[in-house]
Image (cartoon, rainbow, N blue to C red; front, side, top):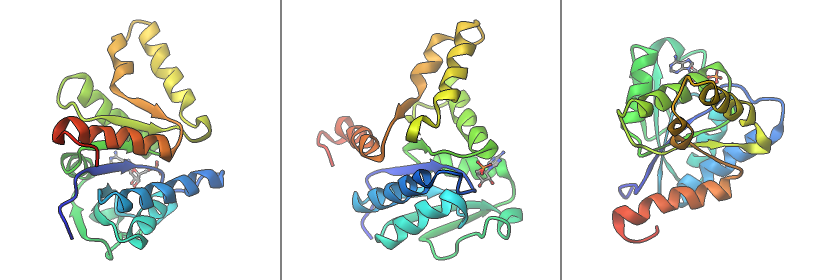
Length: 192
Ligand code: AMP
């Protein structure tokens, strides 16, 4: 398999959610990552919309790098049929391995775990530990309450206005493809 041009870390729910739109967008994203020759970095589970992203990427011949802690191998059905499976001791280690092996982060709808992952990379960005782009896939406005909360925190003086600039909400996988594709332009002088 050729070396991927972009490694995309996807944080997302371990449940399917109520709206079938989320699973559909997850499948589109997995297929997109494979079609563009990028690499999917994810939590290595086979459940919820995380499973949807991975199965779709694999079905389209994509490169998939999964990271899961030992204690979740059973609960999240750790996926052995992916290109690389890293089993960590802790949740913290999982996040770190996922993040350090990625060029960009995409956050799909999810629950507390997904929120934890989003805030971890956002706060790392806030204190200057990295400059990797963070995208929220805002299917049907799913993330608007979160964006409102961040704006409230800024308005109340508990974060600098720059916090809002550290992530970008995109409304569809199509818009996400354009945004991710643009990341390759400055580095390589051409859009891939
Ligand atoms: P959820 O959004 O709650 O369905 O969780 C999404 C994913 O985040 C699942 O794979 C969880 O195991 C994972 N997760 C939950 N908490 C953490 C954490 N503190 N660090 C890393 N991953 C987590």
